[in-house]
Image 1: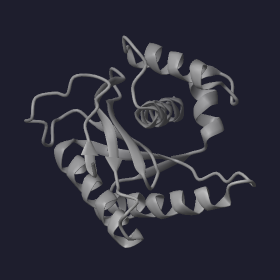
Image 2 (image 1 turned 90 degrees about the vertical axis):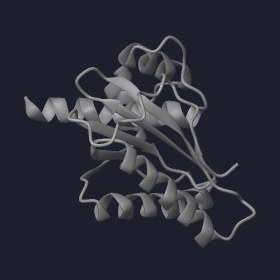
Image 3 (image 1 turned 120 degrees about the vertical axis):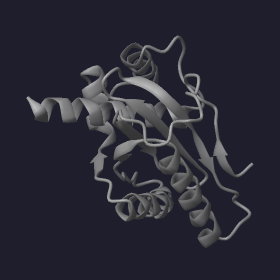
Image 4 (image 1 turned 90 degrees about the horizontal axis):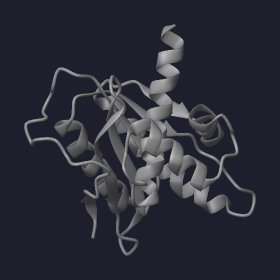
Length: 181
């Protein structure tokens, strides 16, 4: 399946979400096959929406990037997002191609946000872990627990791309809160 996959971490709100008064943060875990997303409400750190934008590996790169663009446009049309948080690129020396592919997806995400005049916060994975757990090298299990506690979720969000996107959004909110002090 391509497009938006609405496996939400919390029940989605009523469909009349368009341009609500409360500000929201869109967290994104960029990827070419599956791009996790989560919308949180900073005041409560409640997850409003979460899921995955999926693309088909059988399609050409340009078509896949267009699918990501369409999915993100749909999300931004539905939610009152006032900023976007995206995980920074990282490259493992054994898998440089992964970073290149992730970079394509991330570029599209940044472009869509810029077209809408939305500020983008890029956060490194180690910084996200440090903000949520106090440990920049926290395990997946530690991160899942921190996400559940911070967002008040009864169970870990699935799939992992959604959990990562929630973590990105929560970390952006924590950074914003610290800078406001």
